[in-house]
Image 1 (spheres, rainbow, N blue to C red):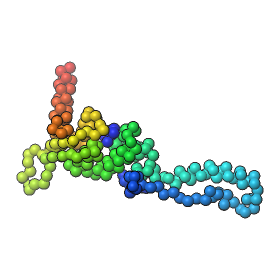
Image 2 (image 1 turned 45 degrees about the vertical axis):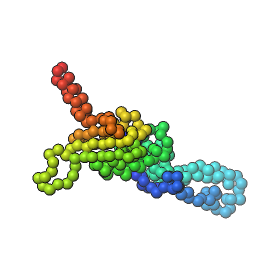
Image 3 (image 1 turned 180 degrees about the horizontal axis):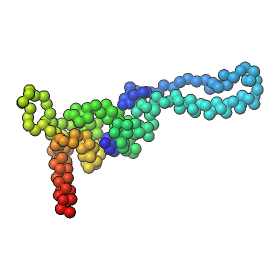
Length: 214
């Protein structure tokens, strides 16, 4: 799936008032390396200054180690890492020009809805997350007694208020990737039909006809 503008420890951690989880900082003595030296060596000014250089280098490495858990938390990880985490779940391209909070929302929301992908609930969550507005999804699925199921159930009709931050063509591409391949679909913005899976079927048929003619 390609995601242009669309779960520390987990990809959906608790968040603070600003929507981002506060980072816990470990307290470490500024003299943590010097404090491990024998008392006699601390009397040497040269040796203390010499060891202090390694302590300064060690500080950066320990800070990085302390932040490993946070690097896997989309609420606090750097934007570059957030986009990389998105690629783990098929969100291959989050637009880096989007606001940071929106990028985090896209990846976290995609992770939460992943288990419902291809279902009505999953499509509804995806449409709300992508457009930022309400949506309506009607499909042919259901539960019936044996022998009472309709002949045609592989269809879905989707209606949104807006395509959000996406151009219609990009929005259609994302929605198409979310649908099972065998399902016939229609996508409306308001009352206007912007895409029908029949268009794809017609395009494929036209290409096949051209190949056969050659």
